[in-house]
Length: 104
Length: 160
Length: 264
Image 1 (cartoon, each protein chain N blue to C red):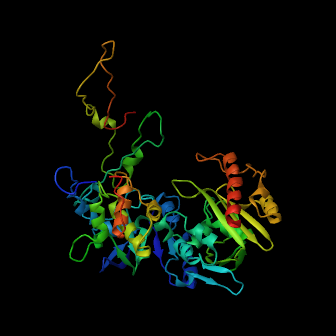
Image 2: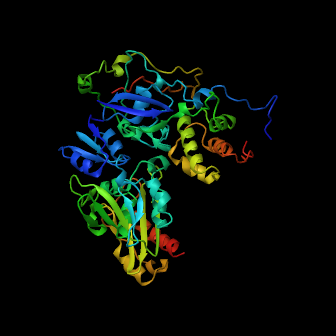
Image 3: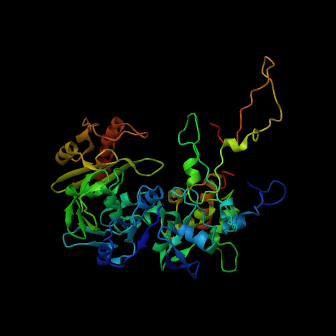
């Protein structure tokens, strides 16, 4: 039987009230004056090779402030690994790249 | 632009809208009622469920203009008049029927629509009724449990 | 969505008058059209919403004993109100989409769209229902002309669908789990003058009658009567959910189940 008091009893979540009354504040609910919106262009295929990114048409669209590609984030990114291990031969482990945006 | 007037949570409101303005945009952007969420925008997930003239509908798949003159209830209109949680909302908290809370408004609105037509549903009926509401955190057991409890029925606690 | 105007007439006559513009389109419950507009697959200059027209809504029985359903009647209403008269039809309506979709989607909208995987076309064709429009009456056999194609002309509205009530009927849907559309759906209806079997979800031409099964079942209304009868896989839909051969197999299985359920 679940306990209703003391150590081991489940406690009511305090954040539930705002979620249950529609007063949570999710990213999509934030609408500040002058706020810009961002759209991420994702791969349209499940597995493929990105050869090149052509942003010319996107830049020409009305209201577009800026189009970002991997070039804008050179030197940014990667997720540092806290504890590098080596393989049996003593070679350092391979770290996958974690680019901010996909590179062509 | 056309002026669309409706009653939302008991208050008469009106706003200029485009033909293509969805009911959910009218509520969120026009009235600032951001409790109704847009999860998928393709009528799959049910986070945008509101009541229009007492019936549960997906507000992302209905134009604001079609709710002209209608009575609309959103999650913001579900608490008791004194601000305390309604029976259904309280049951969701008591039975841990939510985690991140994003799907919760739709779940509560669907649950309310179900219990209005069917005050003592079976567990199978609850599950079937929620087929258009998707939760990606907790799974559905505690949501079903909360709705069973809100209908005044015993809730099995064996799974806890 | 591209921008458009929206009009919401209160009467059928006003709706017919409002559709005059070149790029205007009717909006039923919108459960298919609104997602289509969001995808920018349609670009009407004006939508004429039929949801405010009271005369298009509701069920009645006519003098010939048919269930007559207004074109603007939602699936939820059919599920509730047709149950006493035509249970198989009510059951079909009760399993379209999900509850919130059923509160908006209409029978007239479904029939005007004629999605090859929609449920209603199977019931209409198997029941040999009559589709009444703002201009005329169309027999079900003449109405469905292929995938998303019907006998409806521009500006024509489905005002009512009249279903003769069968002695026995059943609908079996093998639902595509994500969309709830029929991967294959089979509606079997037994009338005094014979059995009709309509298949949805399977053919590239949309809903169709399985005449070999109809002949066999008209002689003996028993699942055993169609044992060994194979639906032709030629012209059936092949996609990521199933091959034509798989759909052909489902047609046989579901027809058998529908007959057993209807006869039982």
